[in-house]
Image (cartoon, rainbow, N blue to C red; front, side, top):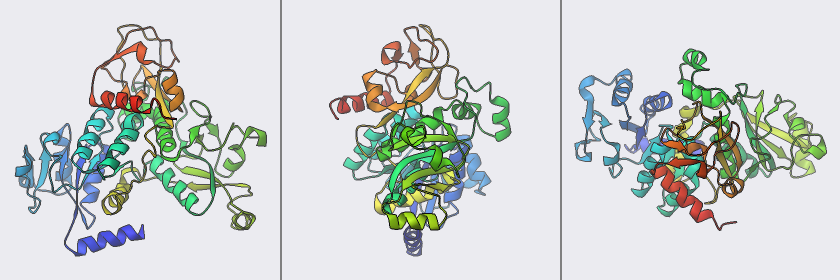
Length: 431
C-alpha cells in the first residue's frame, strides 16, 4: 500500500494522471466517479451509463457546471486538457481512445460486462471489473486473453473476493498453510426470495430489490465464493457449501475436519459463515512450533488452527487500490489463476418451470445460484447461473430445486455465451 501511495504521489508531482473511464453510474459506479476526482493523480472525466442522465447527475452533484458537461459521439471530441466532463453516447466508439488508461466496469450486468472486458482487452486497456456476475461465467478466459495482450483483467479490492485474496496472499507470504477461505453472510438464507418479497427492505436500504434478493437467496454469495476458488485453487467442500453458524471466536473450532469434530470433508476449501458478516477470513495453520507458540502468545487463538479476519470491506471505495496495481505493475487484485476454472455457479430452478417459460436474472422468480466444482458442472452439462436472463427460454420441464441443463433451455447468442462456449471447448481436455 505504501508503495502504491508513493508512486501515485510521484506521478502527480510530475504533473501526470491515471485516466480512468467508468462504465455504469449506479450505486457503486457513481460513488467511484466522485471519489476518483478527489484523489490527486487520478482523472475520471469520461464516463458512460445506459441512462446517461444518471452520469450527468453524478457530475452535477460533484459540482461540475452544466456548461462543462459534454455529450460526445467520437474520440475526436474529447479534450483531456480541458475542464470539461464527458459522457459517451456510444461506449463502443471509445475503447481505442489513447487517453484512457483503465476502464472500470461497474454495470453488474454479465452480458454487458463480457462485451466491455473483451473490447477493453482487445484495445490494450486494463479492465477493472466490479462485475462478479460476468467473471464467474467467463473470467478465466478473459484473464487469459488479457495476459496475451500484456494488460490486466482484475476483480476489485474492497469486495469480499478481493479482500479474501489479499488476506490469502498475506498469509501465504508469511509462510502459513491456508486451510480454508470465506466470508460472512448477513441475510438469513431464503432460496425463494425475489424482488417482490424483499421490496420493502430494499427501499429502506436504498438498493434495488433485485440486488437484495440475490443476496438473500444466496446467489451472490455463491458467485463470490466461486471467484475466490478460481483465484486460489480452492474448492467448495460440498455443492452449495455448508453455511455454518459461528462467531469469529469459535470459527477455528467449528470449521475443521469431520475427523476433528467439525463439518469439513477436506481442507483447501471455501465456505460462508452466518454470524461474521460483513467480514472475511482465512483459516491458517502455523508452519512450525515457533510460530505456533507466538500465535498463542499473541492471543490469536488456541491453535493449532487460527483465523485471520478482516471485519470490513469497503466495496467500490477500495477500487483505486486495484487501479493502481494494474497501472503501475500490471498486476490483478484478484483473477482466475488458470484457464480451467476450479468452481462454477450453476442455475437452480426456484419453482417448477415448463416449456415456453422465460428465465429472469439475479433476484428474480425463476432461478438462484449454487456453487459446485467446474468439473462436475461440465460433466452434468449444467447452465451457468450468470447466463440466465429473459432471453433464455425453457424447452423442457424442470422441477423446483433441480439444476438447469443446457438441454433444458434455448439461449440467444451473445458475446457472453460465445465466450462461455469458447471456454468450455478450450477446457474440455484439460485436467
